[in-house]
Image 1 (cartoon, rainbow, N blue to C red):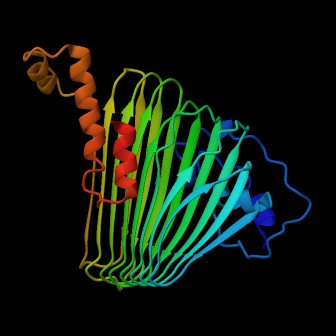
Image 2 (image 1 turned 120 degrees about the vertical axis):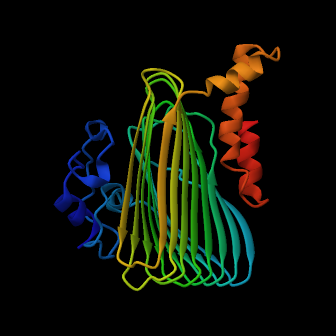
Length: 325
């Protein structure tokens, strides 16, 4: 079944679909599809509308192969409404990919990334684009990891529109590690939504999910993170933590952790905090002569930067911290 047939079979996203529980699905315009699908791939098993959309729209596919043991830095940018990128990262390679926005405002934009990571490879994805007015943007990542590979995914989301990042990560080799750190800095009527499913398919795999939100005005954010640990996956480790600071009474956040664990020799945790700026910390700073507005900025900046401090000294960390300076 090609992408057009599958997306027509699924129909438009609905709020009763668990993949779209928190997303304002009424904002998605009904797409018009070409007469034929250029891709001959079988998408009968795909369930995410956003993952199918670029392929169903016959997006031009960019393929990039990273050779075994090589090191590479690259910028990835979609120049059209719809884009698809296939990345094949070789054994032991190191790669850093910064994803840039297409700043031309379109009614809807969607990108799909298919990433295949070889044994022992070290890969980072990051984006920290300036705030933009893109009305509706989807990004979907399908990541497969071989033994001993590491993936770090880091982002800062800003803007006045609606964005959704979805990730399906498959840890298929012992020692594979997946880590995601996301920061939403939103105000006005903007909204940002993250939907993750991490599949621990073999023993001794690890995953970390760490998200933080700074929400002002009528901004909304959601985090829908699922972890699936297969029956034979001994010594699997997974953690999820979402921290939110609401800077206005009209901002809101929704968090849904899902753990599906089919083995008892694992360590899986999740946590969620939501509140305002710490009044004790504000009092401490103001009592030492710092104006309240400056004190607020200091606390907000510290909350944001702390998320990325544990990253290794790579282009991603440097770029993210520079953006927050």
